[in-house]
Image 1 (cartoon, rainbow, N blue to C red):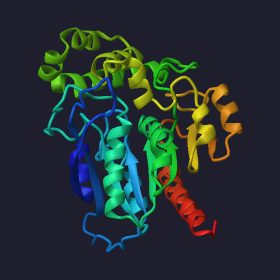
Image 2 (image 1 turned 90 degrees about the vertical axis):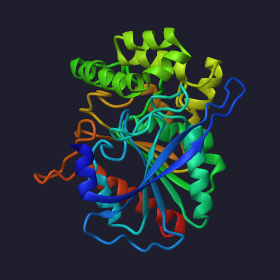
Image 3 (image 1 turned 60 degrees about the horizontal axis):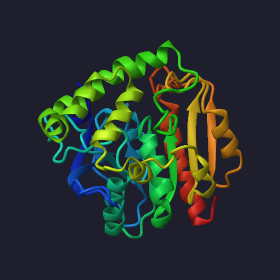
Image 4 (image 1 turned 120 degrees about the vertical axis):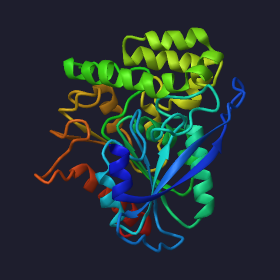
Length: 335
């Protein structure tokens, strides 16, 4: 139903990119990722954009892609601006019937090096355009890790926005104030859908790579354990420490944000079942000392519900557009 809703609501174009992993403890594990370029609302003409039109790349949630981000209402808000809008789709995700993995390698949050290949190609195509990253849910992990690991190498990157949440992958699915809602979301709903979309869909390929790893992943009883096992067996790296350095920008702490190269905003809600009461105090302490990174904590909105009207419009969609406008004004010297 979500795919039918998406294709009946928006005109888009899918573009695939060949990727491989960097590092000494990997064979490269070549595969492909994609960007779904959202062109226009159905029935409306696509904008004729100049070469320097800002580019907004959205990073979806855990098992999500362009049709279920979560939620696609953000597209309408962004398409109302003179911007190019694309959705990055990591290894292993996509619509029903899409191709499975080529290599027995995936990361639940996505490999920053794969995103960097896409960013490099897109920025070379439109060298005069500013780039903005917007993460949603688990896409915040990739958004944050990419900005800390690669942001300083990308002059076009002007800002990163994380909606809603952000954490070290090694504890992301075990928040300190977890309650029954957290366990229901993580260890029932998302645990099963993750096994289905990443593991069972690619069973033959993954079992040939590691029968033990595949069985252990399927047997995982909670989402944090599943993450750890996938990282051990299917990250693409034989050296776990190198995998951490290449993938997890927040491994151990968020001290990296002290040197973040661009404006960086992490948005939380107090009633979010994924991170009840917002970020950990030690994360807030670091953010208080950051020059370019900040936290915004809203009293309500749950996990990307964020509705602000009976028409089910979302304040989080407006916030994304307002953020990009503000960063663009800053770049022009008018903000």
